[in-house]
Image 1 (cartoon, rainbow over the protein chains, first blue to last red):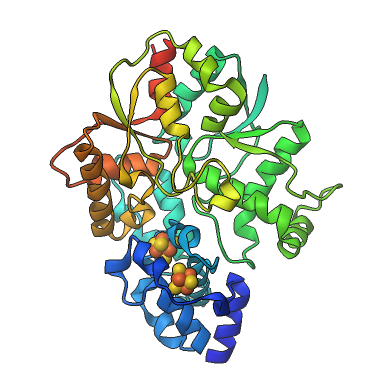
Image 2: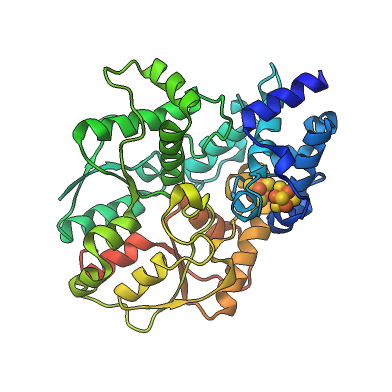
Length: 127
Length: 262
Ligand code: SF4
Ligand code: SF4
């Protein structure tokens, strides 16, 4: 399973993990660093090593804000956010694994919340 | 001059002001924004997966509609702009995705990223020109110290967005000068507000928005401007900063300066 997951994640993300020089800049600039158990640079080397299972289980998948800071600031053009997204897709593409369900949403709304927040969260957390 | 215009879902709902002031100001500047006849929600975030096809089709359809009209496509919401621009880049430069998306679309001539997507700020800078904008200003916002908040989506990824230097931008600061006000320089102008995570993890949004607001206040800003409804929401509703600076859409200040805000 894990070998298959690794290949699928690499294919979905288009990321070349071998380009990473482990400088940690992606993690240093990540606005969700404190909230993450595995940080962007760890996604890169854990996928490289095939340590996929802990990533699939981790809540860190839902802490990425898709802010593209790591993509912009990686000196090697690795684009870690694409890897985080591919791992998350690997999870939520499975039946019954949606992180956010439409039924959860009404309770989360307030009068000012822009529609953008709802559609984006659904796109990121559900399939 | 006529342009195709993609407002997006939020500008039809909670962010109607962002849209309204933009249209009125454009008319005052001799530009007509023609809303695309049919458009669908862009989804708010670009699906980065290379094998994600369906979630990008709404963008591709909008891009194709502008191509058919032979017009550049103007966007306003930072998120829509980011999504459309990244989808356009994929149609032009990712042959596998482009082929699969075109198979869905079944057009007579495949779409290959021909439409030029420009953000409203680029319209002001590159079509109107900030010098001309300055001349058109009737009520300069003299002496107002304004912090330009770019957030994450307007500028990144820089190699696709190509609006400005992603780490040291000036387009919004130049806009502020053109309407007669004074831009404040500050560090957090292109850091994230917490974004959509607010829906299920408010703590992140509170933390990030507070950092942004604190930094703007430290630099003596009197207000912040943004092009993003979600940034505006997070900064006004979720900042725990002691200073609660007003956060406004840049189009509102534009309309004010042009004297079209009734
Ligand atoms: S910034 Fe780039 S090169 Fe450095 S650790 Fe992150 S992915 Fe690797
Ligand atoms: S895109 Fe995600 S992983 Fe990358 S810096 Fe932003 S929050 Fe962190």
